[in-house]
Image (tube, rainbow, N blue to C red; front, side, top):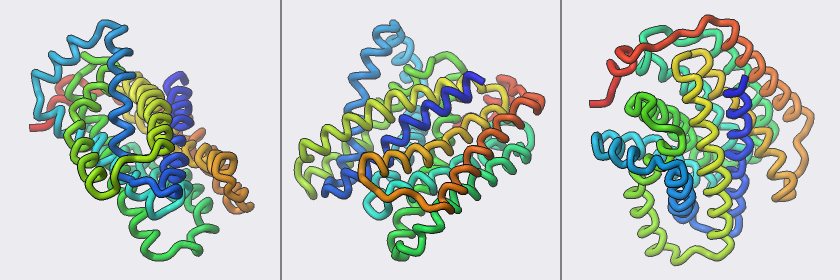
Amino acid sequence: MRPIILGILAAFFFAFTFVLNREMELSGGSWLWSASLRYFFMIPFLVLIVMGRKNLRPLFQEMKGNPRAWLLWSFVGFGLFYAPLCYAAAYGPGWLIAGTWQITIISGSLLIPLFFRGNIPLKGLAMSMIILLGVALMQLEHATDLAPKEILLGVLPVVVASFAYPLGNRKMMELCEGRLDAYQRVLGMTLASLPIWLVLAVIALSTAGLPSSGQVTQSLLVAICSGVIATVLFFQATDMARGSLAKLAAIEATQSMEVLFAVAGEVLWLASPLPAALSWLGMLLVVVGMVLHSYVSHVKKPIQASAQDISSSAAP
């Protein structure tokens, strides 16, 4: 149960991303700065944490041993995850992005054959469909108000991100094989993804100028809440369920709570109108689906993955 609780806490802090990114876009901030500033701000916090735990040297030794893999999967897990989310925030409201992001629940399950010898957990996938049905109901009342361009540019980038995040996370879990803790892994992936953030920052500087003080402050909040707290909590949860396919899928299902937290955040922070009855029904389905997903993961016999199983799908 502890990994599930950690997953829900991670979802709460992840929700800050959708609300604050939308606020930055509404105030005229560039999505390029929103994406790059978060990871720039994450570095000093993570360095202090890892140094305080005396784990900095082992991290650098691990990264030095396989730099290409670190650069590749950090680019996938962080670069192709967060840059598309920030881009989508320029074209769609926070609730749409948070709702579409729940595709990652199914994305994670569909990626399982890349890491383990076994079948996709169909029961867990069925529970994920209940969650997605709830998400669809939540968005239905708003979808008629969106132009086709908003739907296309606000949805497709998030779909890319929904596959990139679990793929990068699981590939790094596979690469590290338990030698690094969550703090080390997040710091390592942040450092390895710096090239993409530097490129985006240069483009932002040349096209939009320096970020406003408000965008800097909000990016700092996103970095602390989502980049550090939420990411570490989520990585800790997935590390605890590393050997069980069903439990790993259940933890990824807890991210459905981001929708509820994002709706609450937009109502309280951005003064958005309260959801209608159809949306509340959707929220209920999200919660019920998450609970059923957790139940299925505990009653089903865990499928343990041996080191040989994991290494057989290692990146070239």
